Length: 92
Length: 387
Image 1: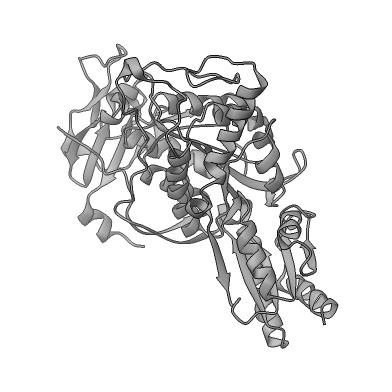
Image 2 (image 1 turned 90 degrees about the vertical axis):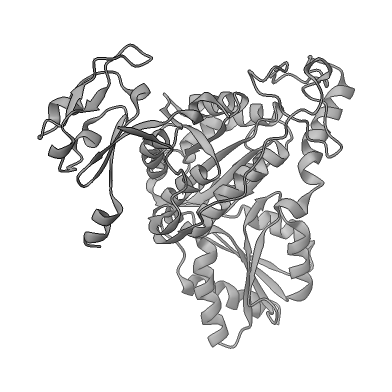
């Protein structure tokens, strides 16, 4: 299998689900950090392969899973996933 | 923080449209590279894959046009990926040159055409089935490829999976010739937790003995991709088994014959069709895609009026199932072809029935689907003719 298919995303548990970051897709624009209303994300001190600082979760407990980070990311590098229990509790 | 391999297949029951089903079918089949240029009514495929692919370790790239899109997927395929592109009429025309390159270089890939009203910009948001002949003859030179026609979102998913399997099996581009209505129609789509893997045929000899275009007994050569230690040679020129240019007429005839025969000799592997109420039918309706679904309504009206009609639905449009259509012609008194153009597949049907029964076309240039009444009138017309 090729290198691309081996790539995996980083995952953080937050109260309502998960936040994923695919670091190699990040170009360090900082939109997700800037737009997060709960200041869950911050730019990491380490670099990705391209030499940018990808976001990391620094305040997982504050996350309300609003999904702004996923919406705003121009490179599909950040996304959220609702946990099973949460998803079942929601309407159709 | 943890890492997790995300399960790529969106298994379960979903309510999605045909375009989305094609996107999910591609992911399920192992497609991890998609390059396209947005065009209505294909955009839902590109839109969905733009966020789905990165999450399953794949690549989405929006190219500058459709020429670049098909070229990108050919490159991706030679780099070892399963690759797909999707477009509609105008983009499909742009892809034609490199469709031929895919045939000549025997590159497995899948090309989706969500057909809309044409020629030219035509009716960007409305349905037609005007590229059926272009799918067969659009690129230059003689070739044989496979084209499949889904009639529902579920089938769009299933046929996309199948398209990848066929493209790897025969090393040909496989076309999914769907239409705007199937693409935008929302229905129940059941996605299994796993689909059979479409494995690429790999060389069985060590690199020093490898000839990139030396076919196996079934005329398909194993494919070594870039970076696997084998010599990779990709050329659109007429070539010999080594891949070197050979300008002799004999070499050209040998190569083109093999490219055609490797598909033509194995019809049982790609010939799919559906027969509905055809056992006792005196009139057969031959159709495909959304027109076939509408035809079912016309057949119902005919049965109510005392005309025994049945449906022969083409799932594989190309290579055309000559024999199956001829067998139908032997059983019925007349054939009605329903399609959203002014007569394309009907020519093939006429050829395949070899004059045994009258063939009547119910045509519409597109912009809307047929009404069941129009199909019924066609059935009545043929019924009158062959009484």
